[in-house]
Amino acid sequence: MNMLKIGFIGVGGIAESRHIPAVRKLAEKAVITGVSDVNHHRAQQIAETYNIPGVYENYHDLLENVDAVFISTPNKFHSEISVAALKAGVHVFCEKPMALSTKECDEMIKAAEDSGKVLSIGYHYRFMKNAQAAKKVMLEGEIGEPLVIRAQGLRRRKVPGWGVFTNKELQGGGSLIDYGCHLLDLALWLMGDSVPVEVMGSQYNLLSRTPDQVNLWGDFDHTTFEVDDHVTGYVRFENGASLLLETSWSANIKEDLENVSISGEKGGLDVFPFHLNQAKHGLLLNSEAAFIPGDDNPGNPQAENFIDSCLGLAEQVVKPEEARRVSMLIEAIYESSLSRSSVKLNERREVEK
Image 1 (cartoon, rainbow, N blue to C red):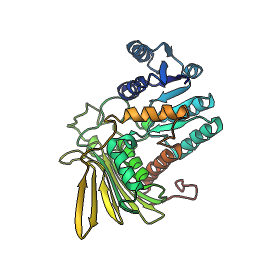
Image 2: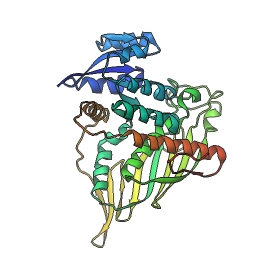
Image 3: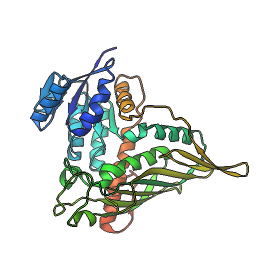
Image 4: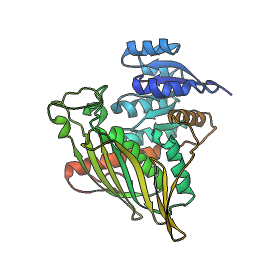
C-alpha cells in the first residue's frame, strides 16, 4: 500500500489537539509531510515539535507536494482553500462548518466531483460511540419513523475567549455555526433522508454585550461582540417530522446540556447519555447500554475514515452533500432571525430569497 502524504493548512489548536495526533496513529497508512499557516512561526513550531519536514508560507506550494490535506482555518477560507486543493488533485478534509453559504458549499462539491477526489467535513460527533450506537438502533428500526427531534448544545458562560471565534467576518457567526452545527448535523444524520422544507430561527447576543462578564473560557471584549451567543431554531420536514434546536455558548442555565433526543412512532432514544425508551409488553421500558464499543476519542475513527476513503478502502461517513444541508439550515436560521419570519426552502434545497 502506498503511503498517503498528508499536509495541514492551518495548525491552530484543533489541528494540534485532534487531527495531528489522529493521523500519527495511522503511520502504516499515512505520513504528515508538510504544514502551512498564515502564522509562519507557528507552522515552524508545529513542524519542529512533530518532526514534519515541510513548512510552507504559501499553501499552494504545499498542495504540490501532498496527496491530501486537513484544513483547519477560520470558516471564511474553507471554501476557497478546499476548491484550490481539489482542483490541484488533492483530497480534502475540511473542518466544520463546510462553508459560510450553500453557494460556497456547491462550489466545493463541484470541485470534488470534477476532480474525483474525496471531500469530507469535520463533523466528528458522528464518530462518537454513543452516536454510532444510536445510528445502529435507528437503522434497525427500533424506534420507527422519527417524529420529533430535539437537539441541544448549551454551555453556561463559556464563550471561547481565544482565536477568532467571536469575529463575524472570519467565522460567519457564533454559537450556532461553531457549536450547534455539531448537534444539528448529528440529528439530521440520525434522521436519515428527511427533507427540510421550512425553518424558523432566532438569535441573541445581549448577554455577551453586557459589561462585567463572568466567562469560564477566557476573556473577550463585550463592546465588540457581534456574533450570536444563543440561538433557537425550528425545522419542519417534508414527511411531517419536526426538529427543535437550541444552542448557546453562554446560557444562564444550571449546568451544561448536550443531547440529541428523538421521539419516534415505536419508541425514542437519547444519545448523551444513551437511552432507548419503548412501550412493549404492556410496559414502559427505559434501556441503558452496559457497554458501547468504539474509540473514546472520535478524532481517531474520523481521521481513519478520511484516510481510508482516500485510499479506496472505506465509504465516507460524512458526505459533502450532507454537510451542505447543515450549512443550508444554518443559513436559513440566521435569515429567519433577521427577517423575523419563517424561511422556506426551494426545490434546490436552498434558502428562498
